[in-house]
Amino acid sequence: ISEVRNPLSCPERIDPESLFSILQVQEAIQILEIVGVPVPEVPNTERFKMVQDMFVRQESVGLHSATVEVLKKTRSKLMLKEFLSRLPSSLQVAALSISIRKGDQPRLISALETPYVFAAEHWE
Image (cartoon, rainbow, N blue to C red; front, side):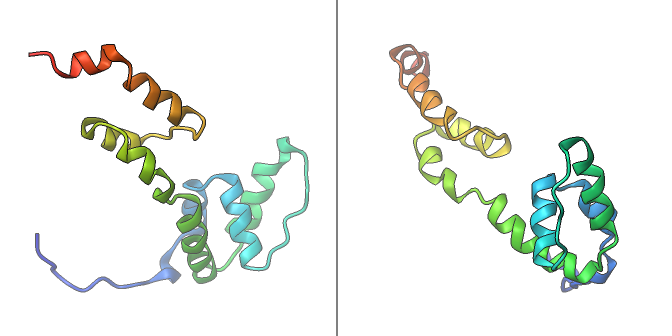
C-alpha cells in the first residue's frame, strides 16, 4: 500500500442529510447543541423528523467539526480494553465489530471460562 496523494480535508463538501443518516438521534442532538442550535423537547414520535429537519439546515463545516467531536466520545472503543484482553484472540475482532452491552460483557466472559469451553479449546 502506498500513498498516491496527501489527503485533503474538505468539510464544506459534506452533505448534512447523508451525515445525519449515519448518526443516532442522540448523537445528532449533541451535534446540534455544539453548533448552537437548541433542540426543543417533543414527543418521541416527532423527535426523529424534527431533529433531521434541523440538522440538514446546518452549515457543513460546523457540522463536520462537531460530528468529529461527538463521534470520538460516543463511538470510542477504549472502554472495551479490559473486556477484550479477557477474550480469546479468535473472538476479539468479533467483539469490536458488534455491540456487546456493558452488562453482558461479564456474562460472556463467565460463559467462556466454564470448563466445557476450556475443554473445547484444547480438542485435537
